[in-house]
Length: 185
Ligand SMILES: [Zn+2]
Image 1 (cartoon, rainbow, N blue to C red):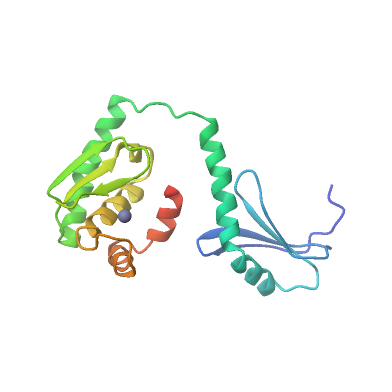
Image 2: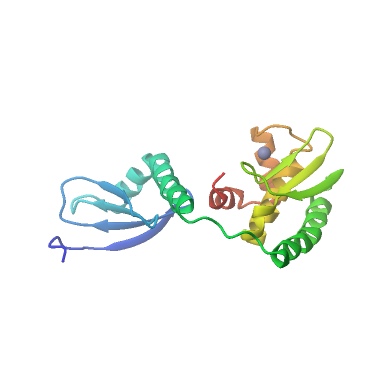
């Protein structure tokens, strides 16, 4: 058992990352990302929770990078099962509903929509307005699919990832940061 005393325990979300804050009889602030991706911030007894939160904020990029590395390793280890025909058909049917819904909300329309397996991207939007959606999204939630559709439709207006582009995405998908993070772009 840990001989150091556990004084309190707080769970907070910082910049879309869930962090567990603990206080122990240690000398310096520490941050740790466990093999399951869980983030633990430990602070000395004399430090306040606010100080620990600030420390986590200052190191948020490191936390994200470390989490990403862990996730990457985990996915490299287990090869994915190929999607079944039923899963592919279910996904296409879902896309057939969500896509026009997003188009109508944004009043932006693709010339053509294609679903295909892609290696490096979740979606793409050509200069002539053809949008491709990665079939791999069949493994993800509806909100992920919706985010990718909104992202690609927004490219019909902004052909870049400028602030204006993200503003447009945020108008139709306010939670885009969290969803994008869960997709590990
Ligand atoms: Zn993009």
